[in-house]
Each structure stands twice: as structure tokens, then as C-alpha cells.
Image (tube, rainbow over all chains, first blue to last red; front, side, top):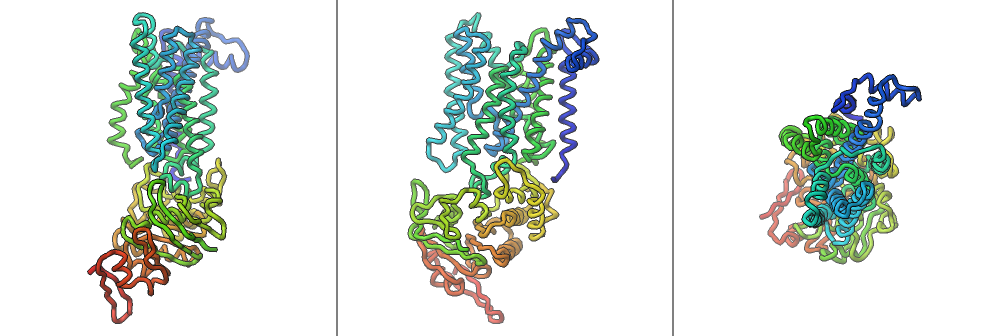
Length: 337
Length: 255
């Protein structure tokens, strides 16, 4: 092991813990940190908590699920972004490069247009994300090319644009008073409606995809070299690319289906993680997950506390992300060429 | 063990680059591939590595068809040193060398203690242990080439194939890298490299293969093959020889 990654992991963990404390205590109903520990400890040990039932209900039913979802989604988007940046050998790639977000968006607005239930909308969005990436992958592999990676990215851009047109059409047809605001809100990303029932369908795909990526961590290092080098080093790049795209898409689609489109997290957090622990995926993936979780916890807490109305997450991540990214471009160029 | 291509037609799906090529490289020997740009050097090299399937004919290593050998087994026979390049991510040089060990593990494994020891001794062999923690993107072109050589050695292959190993190096580093390449052969590896410099072939290779427009112009021991006549035909330009009367060494230059 080269340069120690311990300080980097310590910083990331600190941010996550601070994000958790921040998210649990702040809100329209402020709760002391002691009460939070009391309730969580009581739940773990099976005893009764020494706090008013209202506080316990806020922690367990309202804030708890949202906090967990924010941490999971932040981690998921960061992990997917890390995987895609390595796979495409390009630090400017984000998890929706292959159309996962636009596919999910089209699914969601169609669901809203037909006034389906929340679970159905999430289901369609999830399937839409997976379907869009599968279509991109099939088209990209069917066209003969000497640069399969570039072709895949270009196909993703083209299909994404088509799906965007589909979203535009559905918005144009939608009822401007009942449906359009819901669509807009969804497209900007929010965790306001997250409840306990959202956690299992989110956790399953995120855990599965992340485990696959972590299992392939060393092969992902090698695949960030050129295609020919990776093959000459003994890595079957074709099948592994399918596995990595599938895992990262699973993770992204589950996140988008739960919270709508939250941009920037999957683009910025991998950079931050790389500057903390280096480019080796065996350290980068866990560091990005921890950092992404902490990051989205902060963002979501600001989203629900900064003003009287909820600020959409996508807007906050863009407002924070843009200057941050410009700073990254200027200062952290040494971590990539 | 011998790496050989018989009756090879080489090229891409839409373009045939060369045909009727025979190549044989035994272990312990250095073969130089010479020829003008677009003559098929790199295409032939990729075909011999198994990166590019032959359009006709067959590449065999140790009597076994490369096409029938898995990617992982191939990597344990043949190492590839690409033209000096800049990686996207700033891996430490040691990690780049460790990547040479990939084919010795399974799909989910990371390098173990043995792999680290092999990588370390391979870096010692090329005198680059001091670069271990340096980001690969921050070291010089010559150092990068040595890191790639160390990676190839760590792969523990039987043959090492290099694409213009000195293309982007300064004069001093060219000599250093070529001497190390020659040393690979004395360790028992079969070595194949492409070059634009006939003098490099003359000094560091045992045999040379001259390739023009996908066809073989000459092949054999460097002393007999590298002549004014052959080189003139190869590059379609007049070539002169300078010979040092004391040492008997000669060098070519374009007239």
C-alpha cells in the first residue's frame, strides 16, 4: 500500500457523522442530539425512550427515513459516478451519461401524467432508467467501431436527447395546474415525500450494485487504462464493461426513482474522494460512498431548513456544485491529466 | 517456446493492411519491426498480441493458437508495452506496475503479498524503486517507459512486445530504455519492438523484419538485412552508411 489513505477516510467519515447530526437535529421541529441518541439506543436495545412521543415519531417516522434515504442516495450517486468516470476514462462523466436519469425522468412524468400512485411512478422511473441504458448499450454494441467507449458515450447523448424530447412532450400535454408542478418538482429532485416504505426498494438495488463494483475494484483500475492495454493485461473488458454499467445503472436508477433527478453529486464527489484517498478504486469507492452520503445529508438539510418552502435538491446541488467544480478545475488538476 | 504467425493477413474489419506475413520469435531473441508509417508495423504487432484477430492465417504461441487461448492465459504469455502515454488518473507508479500482476489473480482478487514482492523486484531491476509512490502522471517520459517495462516484467510473460518504445524519449533516455529492452532478452524473454530508427535495430536487435505497405521486404539477422539497398527500398529514399574505422560500428543516415 502506498500513500496512506487514513487521513482521507477520517475526513470523509467526519463529514458523514457531522451530516448525520446536522440532519437529525435541525428542522421545523428542532431536536437535541441527546434525544436522538436516546431514541436510537432505545430502538436498538428494545427499551422505551425517555422522550415525548412526538419527538420519537419525528425521529423514527419523518426525519429518520429521510436522513437514511439522503445518505444512501448520496452514496449511490457518488459510487455510480466514480465507476463511470473510471470506465469512460473521463473525469467529466456523471452517472446519467448513458441516459439513466433521462429514462427515469420519462418514466416518472408518464406515471404522473396518468395519475398513477407513488409506488407505480417510482417503479416506472426505475424501469425507465434501466431500459434507457440497456437501449443505449445495445445500439452502441451493434454499431461497429474501433472505439467502443466513445461510441457508447455518443449513443448515450443522442438517446438522452430523444428521451428529453419525450419528457418535454409529456409536460406540454400535462394538466398545468395539477400535473405540471408535480413533474417539475420531480425533475428537480426532492426527498420531501420519502417515508419508511421507500427505504427497502432503495437499499436493495443500491447495495447490490455497490457490492458488484467493490468486488471488481482492482479490474476497474486496470480498465481505466486504454482498452488494448487492459486486454493485454488479462482483463476481459467486454463482459466486465457490461457488469460495471449494469451495476452503476442499477444504483443510479434506484436513486432517481426515489428522489428524482439530483445532478452534480455523482460528478463532484468522485473528484473530492480522489483528492482525499487517491485514484485506486479499492479505496476510492468506499471513500466516495461515505463522502457522497455526507454531502447529500448537508444539501438535504439545507433544502428543508433554509426557507419556508422546500428548495428542490437539484437546484441546491447546482448552486453549490458549479463554483465548487470551477475551483476543482483550477486546483485539483494534478489528480488527473 | 516460440511466438509465430503463419500466412497472416492483418487489418481491420473494413481495411486489409497486409497479407502473406510470416513471423517467428523464439525466447531470448530480439526482433525489430521496421518500416514507414502506415506500413503495418502496429497492426502486425497487435495481431501477434491477440488484440486484433488475424484476417487469415494463425498466430501460435508454444504451438497453441492464440485465438483459442483465454485473455487471461494470453496475458501470462505475452506482455504489451504501448507507446508512452499519459494515464487519465494519477495512479502511483507502483500501482501501475502491480497492474502487471492482474492476470495472476482471479476476477475479484487484488494483488497479494507475492504480487507486491514481484512488482517490487521488477522495479528494482529497472532502478525505479524511488518512483514507487510518485503519481504516474507526474514522472518524465523516460521514467514512464521504465515503469511500463517493469509492469511487463512483473507480468512474468514469455514474450514482451513494445510499440515504438523510444518514440517520445530524449536522446539519452533512448539509449537507456533500449539497453533495458535488450536486457529483457538476456533474462530469457522473446522481445519484439517496432522502431523508426534502423540504427536502434542494428544495435539492439538480433533480427529485423522490414515491412512496407503490408508486405515483407526482408527478414533476417540485422547484419545481413540492414543494408543501404534494403533500407533504401523500405523507405523509398537514398540511405548512406557511416562506418567507424576503429570499432567497425556503422550507422545509417538518410542521404
